[in-house]
Image 1 (cartoon, rainbow, N blue to C red):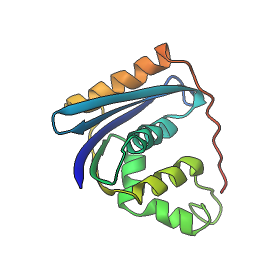
Image 2: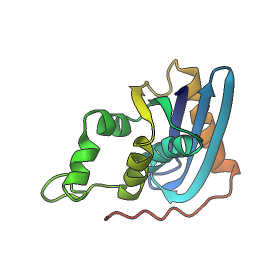
Image 3: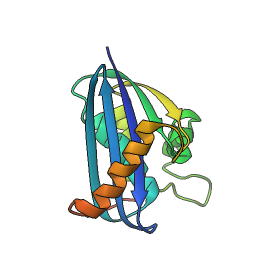
Image 4: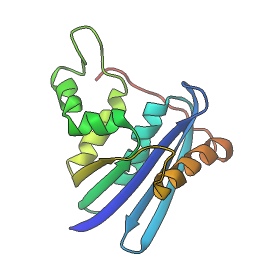
Length: 155
C-alpha cells in the first residue's frame, strides 16, 4: 500500500457564512493542493470537506496519515464518537441529533477504503503544512466560485 499524508484545514467567514477548505496531499516528493469554497456553511463542515476531498482524490487504497487542527473531527474518529452516533441513528444523545451527517457518512465510506491514522495539530502554530492549508482555505473563499452547501442533517 502507498503511504500518503493529507494535511487539511477549513475556514469560514462568519459561522455560518462563506467557507473554504484547503488540502495538501503528500506522496514521497510529490505534493498536490486542493481547495474550494461554499456559500453558506460552517467551519466544521469545511474541516470535514477538506479531509473528504483529499481522500476522494486517492485512486487506490492507501495508508493515510491525516493531519487536522479540528478536534471535532479527530476526536470523533479516534474516540469512536461518529460510530456511536451512526449506531444510534445519528443521535448524539437522547435528544440531540448529530450535525453534518451527510459529510460524516461520506467520510466513513471513504475511511473504509483506506488505513487511516489521525493526527491532531495545533492550528495557526508551527506546522507549515497546516498553515498552508489555512491560506488555501481562506484564499478559496475570496477567489473561488462559491458552491451551494446543502447539508442533510438526518439520515
